[in-house]
Image (cartoon, rainbow, N blue to C red; front, side, top):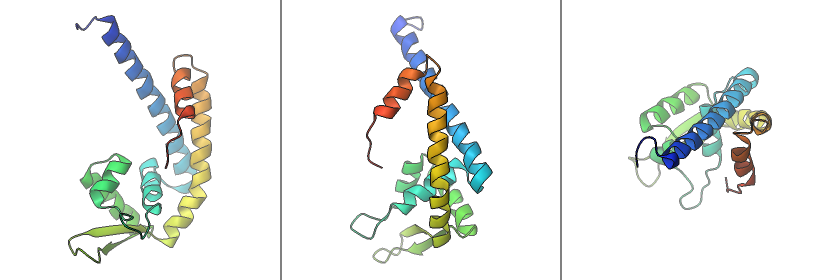
Length: 152
């Protein structure tokens, strides 16, 4: 393959379209969450991921699992957890079976904020997808996103 290979060019164009769709959606949701709830999209994602933990086996996430889930480095995730903990939205505690492990739970205030922000997130997502669907280059990607049935 060469740099001018049509297959490579099509692949690069597809990646650019996907990147554009992601960027537009993320920016739209970010503005909505900031304006209405003083939350960034990363903060919302972290609260959402942590709110899904449970007390059953494998129900609590280690920091590296949280980092993977919110697509951040471990150090960036730790800083984000600290910011939300300082705002009273999260609480850390030692793992009862492994004192080296530290878990993070969403506080009552965090759960309340998350529930208030969830409709804003969902509405902003729908708005961003609808706007992107009007663009012929992005419409096929929007249809793929809308057709996915991925468990949360």
